[in-house]
Amino acid sequence: MTKIKSLDDLRQKKQQLEQNMEIREKSDHPESLVQIKVAMATCGIASGARTVMNALVEKIKKENIAAVVTQTGCMGYCYAEPTVEVKKPGQDPVVFSYVDVKKAEEIVDKYIRNNELLDGILPANYQTI
Amino acid sequence: MNDLALHLLDIVQNSLAAGATYIVVSVDENPRDNVLIISVSDNGRGMSPEQLKKLSDPFFTSRTTRRVGLGVPLLKQTAEQSGGSLQVISEPGKGTCLTARFQYDHLDRPPLGDVANALVLMISANPAVDFAYSYTYNGKTYTVNTMEIREILGDTPLSDLYVMEMIEEMIKENQNDLKVCQIE
Image 1 (cartoon, each protein chain N blue to C red):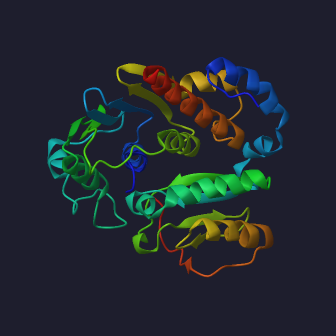
Image 2: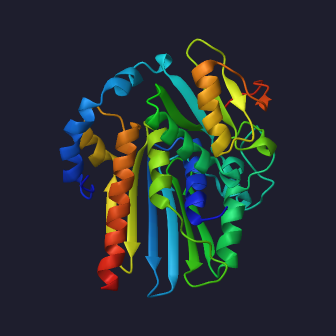
């Protein structure tokens, strides 16, 4: 694959992108997607939230999962960072603590795919800011 | 924080919390003059002179979830331990500009890290915010902004996984080019 270097290259790739529309069409209706939020305040970032976010993005891309990965602020659980909140359509959000790359993959494989809970769930009695 | 890209990711969260809709991130690597400058400026709500004074106090924060605010103090410490400094200019209602300077060859200066990846994460997670990025290496600059990318991509969101990959690749290629051309 040729490397993208300029905005013109990006323009040329656009068509190819449009062929891959399935996930994007769904993203017009975010309520139908699994919403994954990675806490990315100072505490989260210093504990490795970026690595976790990259791992989640990579995983949902590889396995073609209908999900969006976004960032959120500090939920007050600094000691348990990196934390990841997952909200499946029609369900209450679940917050996972001490997430690393391995656990991020487990969240996708077990919770997102099979609705199976993992260790280290935090009580969701916070307000995201 | 292991690298400066993580600091950028963190400082940008402050801009977002201040309600910014346009954020400019710039990195100026200048081994020739032995200086590295990173800066973030935004059009958020800005800070009052009182808030500005307390900014480097780790026990001051505008958050309600916890009582400490370490982002700016950590960056200040990193800059100062690397023979540099931190400057913040802010005006209520107009925005804030934060600039951190580092001595390029200082032993305690953390590596710059993966700024392209940090940017893509910021861009994809904040679809309502426009970002501009400029990277300068020894005086030569590469700039890109989300307005022009959005114009090209039309309806395709910037948070699309393939778009994220492409933007990251584009930024990295151009940054590497700036360096390679000068080494030759």
